[in-house]
Length: 199
Image 1 (spheres, rainbow, N blue to C red):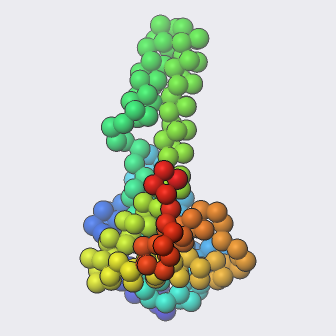
Image 2 (cartoon, rainbow, N blue to C red):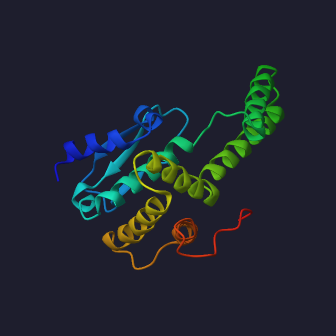
Image 3 (tube, rainbow, N blue to C red):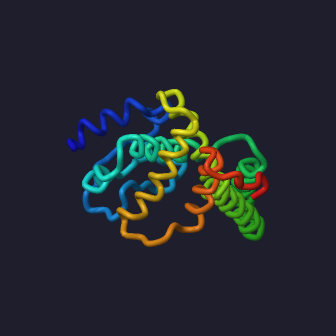
């Protein structure tokens, strides 16, 4: 597999937001098939690192779905959207600036703590199982626009998760992967038991 040709093909199947925000890079020394870092608010590009020696062991539909899922997760991490946590973070920053200007160290500490708590909560939400499941479902929707049926896309993503685990030399799926697989089995019609909405 020629990495440059495969990277071009992968950009073609990405949604437009993925093409703008992400960048695919070859990283042959990494032990994972595909890897990303948690995107921080000041990073304009969100790199996706692929070990193409391991990547070629996946079937083409598995590669498509695992990439779409990764792109959907990366583009789903939003630091600046109007909700209570972003409001608290902004209020904390403004409060810290005002207290600093007034040389009130206690006020600065309190406002700084409030900001830290809000940022921690935003990060936790974006790393949660809920965001993982949302990324899977978003990837399936994008795959449907690329010619896959919902059932096929769920099956390919499910098999990709299991295959990646074997390629990386792991014997067992981790907790997040087990929950994702159960949800994908339900979407693919392979199981009647899905993941509860309040999970």
